[in-house]
Amino acid sequence: MAERLASSASLLPSAASPSSSTRRAAVASGLRLRPSPSRFSQAARRARGGGGAAGVVPRLRVVRCMAASEAAQLKSAREDIKEILKTTYCHPILVRLGWHDSGTYDKSIEEWPQRGGADGSLRFDPELSHGANAGLTNALKLIQPIKDKYPGITYADLFQLASATSIEEAGGPKLPMKYGRVDITAPEQCPPEGRLPDAGPRIPAEHLRDVFYRMGLDDKEIVALSGAHTLGRSRPDRSGWGKPETKYTKDGPGEPGGQSWTAEWLKFDNSYFKDIKEKRDQELLVLPTDAALFDDPSFKVYAEKYAEDQGAFFKDYAEAHAKLSNLGAKFDPPEGFSLDDDKRAAATDEKPVADPAPTDATNGTGPQPEPFVAAKYSYKKRELSDTMKQKIRAEYEGLGGSPNKPMKSNYFLNIMIVIAGLAFLTSLVGN
Image (tube, rainbow, N blue to C red; front, side):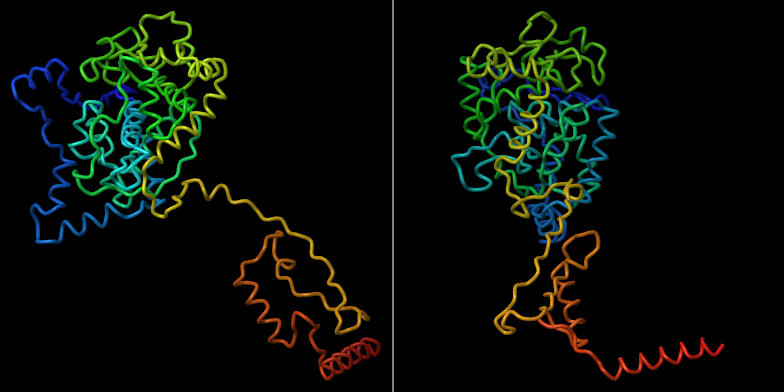
């Protein structure tokens, strides 16, 4: 995942990231490489007490970060993300942003936020400066204006919303996402470095299992998620992997350069598995962890299946992506919520009401009044709410009726109605 989906936005300069040789030289000389503080971390430090009226800014900042996201603002943010995708072709790096925020989860740790996962921690310098996150400053620059525009959503939700929207807009499956993730509030809550996958480990298959099993994922989910490499490029100045450019990347779209896993690297399909299996194009990137999908017997079962059946790949990928996006998250409300709930409301069919059985009070003789069932009188055969049932019952009983017996007849009123009817008939005959 460290090198996954490395793309850049065409409207932004590349983020400076020290190469591995530079890092080694710095360590040898006793220097510690650290990128300049981003404005995301500077804002966090101000929220913890730097500047402004005493106590005012920190208190407002913390309350907003810990609040659950608002569904209406998330829907609007999703539309803004779609517009960004149309002009910057940043699908891959936004997918990577969501993955790297949630991919730090450790299932053996119960406490939040120590367990890592999708909690918005990637916006802080301590985590953003991890080697596996090289280049993700560009992704944060892209979506920060959206966060500023919609303060009622959390970073944790925004990262996952951007990731899921990018997959769907690139032609991928509809993802069963839920929202309501709570943000961490300070850099000290970031997870330690080393929880994300390495692209070139000594034993690739074993490394993949070590990392993904720690998150609670299985072999099928590992292979399905690897299929997201159908999007994006790897850049040697960020990850140390890939060519500076190929015939597929030299002209963009977006900022030119890098080496892609597939020829159409902005289209989400199953070509990643096909290309690895066929091994016919040297211009395409195959990392050691990619090759392991067809070398390892257990992984190969799923890789072969996805190469032949895109529908099966889409189904398994959608489930695995949604699961990854929820790892370690703390939801408010606890069950989370979907942005598509309003489209899934199903009508409740009316159930037939049986005639009541005779009761002992009447010794089984004579017709019995039908019990009052409000649903029988409802529109379009849908069950009425309890409040409406109580209102109808109260009005019915106010006129003298009850659920157990018919309303009493008003004999005087009946006589007056008969007399009025006879008088009307008499006038008609006289005319």
